[in-house]
Image (cartoon, rainbow, N blue to C red; front, side):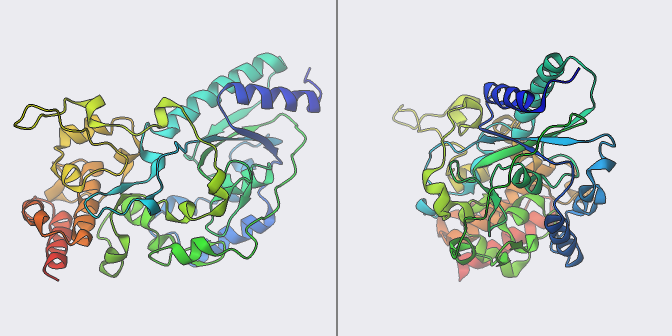
Length: 379
């Protein structure tokens, strides 16, 4: 027999905390109408670019994912590690990888912990019920559900923001047939602040709460498969994978929680492969996924790339698959394409040999971006 709802909710929160989740709440089994309409309008305007998976209309109706659904357990896990913000790192010789991708791929980390939470929940309830787990991998409007569950509000930069933890956290959900009392949504605390809108280099936040993904640096460096629009390249600066700017300038992240989970810490070349020494015999300081040197990224072989970013979100970067480029993996091609743009934006003449080498690779997209970057050095 199912436990009383309030007692079960208290147990779920405690169990989620024991699994390492920083926030847990319960949402009703429906997508809030306001969020549903906003999603449909976003689709209608074509602001999702090449992310065709966003067209899956199961996002509107959770019953298409789990017909017996009666509640949604929403969790959040902080990934902010306390390292300097991208807005405080301005060395043109270094690229920027979004902090969510510094360590291990969060999908597996949250999936494993949610599976364990669900396993313990089944033992505690001691009666059969239906459930499905999602971690940014299915047609779920997770920010809307998390907002309904009281995990925060959707800010003007379209990120979920919690008043005590900020916005640097990953989300996961358990859709379940258990009937649980929903939590109350958190009210919007953005007020009159427009820092995220003003700080976006490419103007991707076209108005409060509206993101044109086609202009977003995260989309351009991660999701876009082919050629980056030339008119946006110079505004991408030194970003080679994702972007943190709209979160870096958010006042609510000034007191964000810090995660000490080893899996979310930056990876270094020292921990992946041996670090070479200079001619004097002293060991070179290891580079890492935090604020990495551009020449180091550009010099990575495909094997070194695989080892450095093994089980990392960086390997999920998309890139076109042409017949001429089948010898290069998608993630590796995507990184090289993005690095050429960052090198071009650095305006550092010392990188000319690197760009000339990349312009000779058997990949038409990398060739074109490398030639563009060489033109930037000329200017």
